Each structure stands twice: as structure tokens, then as C-alpha cells.
Length: 533
Image 1 (tube, helix red, strand yellow):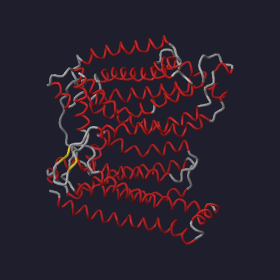
Image 2 (cartoon, helix red, strand yellow):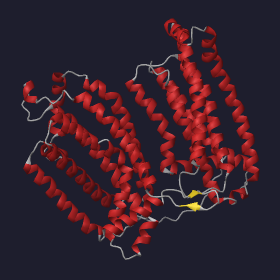
Image 3 (spheres, one colour):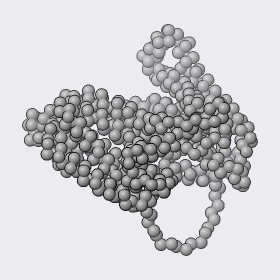
Image 4 (tube, helix red, strand yellow):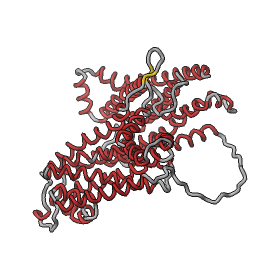
């Protein structure tokens, strides 16, 4: 059974990577470790950066409530980390359970495995482990925190390890039960969309916590204890599994027995259920209604089709909304937001190219059928660049207006709309041009463009964005603040000429360069479009 599970996982991870083409035209298969690391690395980075931050912020808060005159058996540290384990546990459940549905049920690989002499439980366990990589962020933000909590609370190493491992296994089992229940009413598409939304919320939560934790940690212990006293009855209720774990880490044998007894019972239930599953998502059957087919005309049929296709795909939907959330987080955690344009354009411009590539890949899968559409090929191609361009520009204008009305940015922030428009326009067209450079590329996976093309795209966007906004914003700020101006001139070898050249001339030059690059890529795109057979 163990060997079969490992074999299924090996082929699953190999299928997540595109074979590498050699110079002689043949393809070399890649090992599964590259795909595995691509999913695990973000969790390692997020968890590794949070752990030292939380240690230094809360290392002085292992203070019993009784020491502050409050009749509770806990410490301030218990409530804070109990809250963390509770939130991360819920996020993991809501991320992992639908991921099981999306990965396991209605999967082509699952149907193939069912025709082989393999137990259903083996197929289920392998698919559940494979789905686990999609829930990596909450785990990455939880596992290192167990070590931080044990270190600050000075708990027993053995009991801390037993408690941490037990909690993770229990979360896995509860989430697997949730996946079985979700399969009764979730479709594959809705499960994938929900998984992507929860992955996105995990990143949003990480950035928010990184900005809000310093304010939380600087609160005086007595004031913090009064605020947490009422919450402790809910957060550390005896019915929560993380409360059992905190007691286990403190050396409680009864809670250790309770934790692992629950694990054994749930393991038995899930093992038996996995051998009886049908591995198909049930759908609600509604009454069929006879209705006349109506054909509706539209002024912009291609744009309407592209819009629906983009929002149908969960990953593309994520890319379209992702640039909004960092500015929103910084609105609540920062006092000055004049540099918000740099953050937005770095994310949105790169994603605009990716979304444009995804949009044109839909036509690439059907090519040459789209040539038969009653529309010019040029309109068909350039509409793919127009859709992400208009969405991201509208998002940025809305954010700029909101930031200005909140009083966290001066009116000069509106000047950034022009370069944002130009950079996103260039990025969208560049994405189409890169795709048309080799329109017969492999479209079976999401990583449509090669690694070299990604680095080329990111390098140009980062160069234009930083070159325009960084010196431009500093130059505008220095015109209002004489101290900043003097510091900049001093930094530039006391040269007023360099100050004006870098602060004003360089951004203007790059703006005109962007306009030139847009015209050049449009010309290239038209030439490549005519060669697309």
C-alpha cells in the first residue's frame, strides 16, 4: 500500500511540470521534486519570516493572569497563541477540504487509477496528500509557531513535539472529513475557486498580521490582559482541539490520551469511508424547464466572451483581484501612501501580461477555428490585451481616489495614473507578443510561457516601474520639503544637475520610452499575428 501511494504521488508531481526540451528537439522528463518545492517554498518563506518576528514580540508575555490579579489558569501567551492556532486551524480546514474535492473527485487520473488493482483507500490517501500542497500557507504559518510557543513558554520538548504532531494530524483528519462532506454539494469548479480564494486570504492574512503585530506587541501587559480576559473563555474553551494541544505541551497526560484517542477514532472512520467512496461529485438535480432558445446580440461579443472566460477560471480571478489587497492593507497600517503606485504597478503590470496570455491561450486551444469568426483577427487578438488593461486601470484609479479621500496621500498621487496606464498597457501587449512568438507552444499547463520569457517580462516591468516611480515620487516630495531636497542633493555628490536629471528627466525619458515600446510591440504583434497558422 505504501509503495503504491508513493508511486501515485510521484507521477502526480511529475505531471505538474512541463518536460524540458533539449537542443536536439527531444524532451527530457523532470523529477517530481521541482514541482513539490514550487508549492512548499512559499509556506517555508512565510513561516520562516513569521517565527522570529513573533518570538521577539511576545517573548516577555509569558505572564500568568493570576500574577495580574485575574482568576484564570492561563498565561497571556496561551491566549495569544491559542488565538493563532484557532485562526490558522480554521484557515487550513477551509483551504484543504475543498482542495481535496478539486483534486480527487472527477479527476481524470483518479478515474484511471480506479481501473487498476489499487485500493480506493490508497487512491484517496495519495490524492489527499497531493491536495495538501494547496493548503501549505496556513501550515507554514502554524508549524514554526509551535516551536516559538514552546520556546517562550519553556515547555517540555517531548510533550511539545507530541502536541504539535498530534494537532497537525487531527487537523488533517478533520479536514478530510470536511472534504467528504463538501463533495456532496460542491462542484469541481466551485471547489477550485474556493481553494484559490482561501489561498489568497492566507497571503492577505500574512501581510496584515505582519503590519499589525508590532502595535499588538507594544501594548502594556496589564492592558493586554484585561482585553484578553473576556476572550479567553472562547479561545481556550475545553472543546477546541488546540486547547487540548496547549495542555499537552504543558505536560498534561489526560489531554495527551484524549488527543491521540480522537486521532485513532477519526483515522478508523476515514479509512472505512475512503474504501466506500464513489469518487464523484454529486450535483443537485433540479426540475428541467422547457424554454425557448433566445439569441442575444451584443455590441462587444468578443470582450464579453473574454470577460466571462477570465472570471470563470479561479487562478485568473485571483490574479485580477490580487493587486487590490496590498494597497488596502497599507491603508490601515501606514500613515503615508504616496509610494502606493510602486506596489500596485509591480504586481498589476506583471499580472496583466499573464492574464492576457491566458486569454489568448483559450483561442490558441481552438486555433484555427477562431479565424472563422465574423470578426477581424486584429480585434480578436488585441481584445485579449484590452481586457486586463482596463480592469487593472479601473482598480488603480479607484484605489487612488479612495486613498486621497482618506487623507493618507496628497493630490500629487493622481500624477501616477498616467505612467500606470502606460506600463500596464505595454505589459498587456508584451504578453500577447511573447505568446505569438511561439503560438504552437504547450497549452496543457498554466505556466504557458518559459522561464526566460518570465524573467524578461519581469525585468522590463520592474525596470520601468522603479525607474519612473522611485525617483519621480522622491523628486515631487523634495519639491515640497526642503530637507528632503538637501538630503538628495547631498547623496548625489552635491550636484543639483544630477538631482534634476535623475528626479525629473529620467522618469520623463522612461515615460516616452514606454510609449515607443508600446508602438514597437503593437507592430511586432501584428507581424506575428499574420504568421499564426
